[in-house]
Image (cartoon, rainbow, N blue to C red):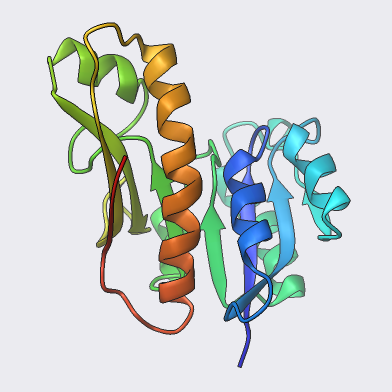
Length: 198
């Protein structure tokens, strides 16, 4: 039984592309929707180029009414009937009410070795802390920000010359390897963590 996957993005969608391109051949899942909170998100055109249906629900008209925005998200998702939701650079914090509806079926990728550096500016924070290692984490989404069971991590060494920008650029290929590997396992019910070394 092939799993249906919806991917939520806010920007260029490089992780979305990596996920979508991995879901071919004998892969146990297929992308059925790419949804963005930004109608101008570059990833929407990339998704259409890959033949994936897209929906944009601009969060701005909703102001601070997160419940109304999430109700619109939920409607779009229900129409696509996904089994799994992958957050891939989706820059809106989701409420506990929304995450509860998709508990055990929603994944996120975060650019740090969780539980370190939840939230933003992870690359700068790793450098400020003098960390020898940096990386990314795929985890199940729960009500708490960047929390939930860890399903995979990719690690790399921090170089003396690294800046936040070089760390981000060097980490991206690891993100593009880790997220598809985790999704492939998750789609067949395997929650064994994937560990990669860059």
